[in-house]
Image 1 (cartoon, chains in turn cyan, green):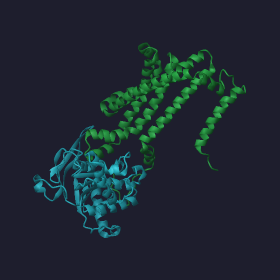
Image 2 (cartoon, rainbow over the protein chains, first blue to last red):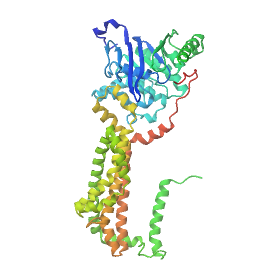
Image 3 (tube, chains in turn red, brown):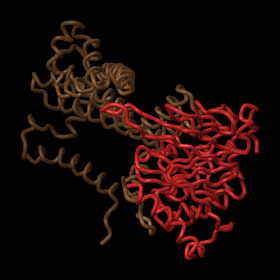
Image 4 (cartoon, rainbow over the protein chains, first blue to last red):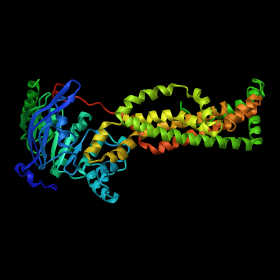
Length: 266
Length: 271
């Protein structure tokens, strides 16, 4: 791993992400709205974490806070041993839904966008984007524009863009939500393949319980607003995961437990 | 049945119109005072070529300056108003309403201020073309997908980089639409102004010849303006297509993009 935790983070050594009693109140039209309430989680390096919860529970807000894209009112968020007051693409890569690819840039230029922000030369950028493109299985599509790619391909490009600066942490905000179910399954599988070759810490948000169980090492379940962590489930299915596992009792039990938690919280 | 190539059809229509222009007056279906035949129109154009050429240059000069004013001011004002929320809420409705005002009623004031020379035409047409440029620039900036900016920020883009690398390219298609319309209005503005009060230019020639009932020379002027406008449109389209390759196709794609599909698993009840 490139990023070395600084000494201040020694007490949280081993935790890639350390969220400690984070609350957030934002100004709504009728006074303060409590979005998050006393959220804590510790994410070990290299783990695949999935957060599920009902719409509007603040899971995206929480992810944005981990990315340094949004403030929180109380508590502490450390990523690799240090707070993250503003985005730091060398520590955290963020992958959004497919709509966040820039339609005026080719696949190469999209993937290289974070590198171009830092004034890297064209040759150096290309040298780093080529392997990313082949990692996500899109070799030969570098000169295409997003509108020439399918939804799944666009999401592969997004993943490549998130990986190109080699951040140890990858945050994914419902990245496959806009895909049809078959593509979504394939992409989940692909993501696991890519993840297994890169050793990244992943925090992944989804609405899909199947996706959650299929992908995760650990699933966190959040309550409706104000968002709290109401369950933390270890998914001890072996890796590599296979589609057949979805039919097993263990898989069904895990999915059912998450579903019960979400239902109870209403 | 195979549908004929639209290009061929278009040229066919054009040629038919030109032939009709020649034949209808020749056969006496319309008096030549109303519609002088094409050959006569072209002949007087050829005879007075110096005059028309000089007039066209004056008009062209005014059009170019008016376009520079319309586009320059329009982009700056549009970007400022579209980019700053307070200004947007305050001023955008005002400008939108002003757009509907027939600005030509102000032209007499422009001639009082700037005289009957080129200056008044340039100012009038510049203002005329300013509105669509300004409004579409403001719209282009306002309608940028916030997800683009969020993504750029997450990758560490500074404010300047967000402007140059996201806001400008993302708003380009909408801005271009406004530029094309603003440019067309600048041409219209110049011609109309020349026809109202002027001492030179194609519009002036048309009005002058109309008052002495010299139809072929009126139509020769109209022909010049037609060529000017069509040439402008072709150039503008070419430019637009080159600048925003991704736009037309991207828009089509967006409309066809699949909606999120419900999952096989029990869906978490929406809060």
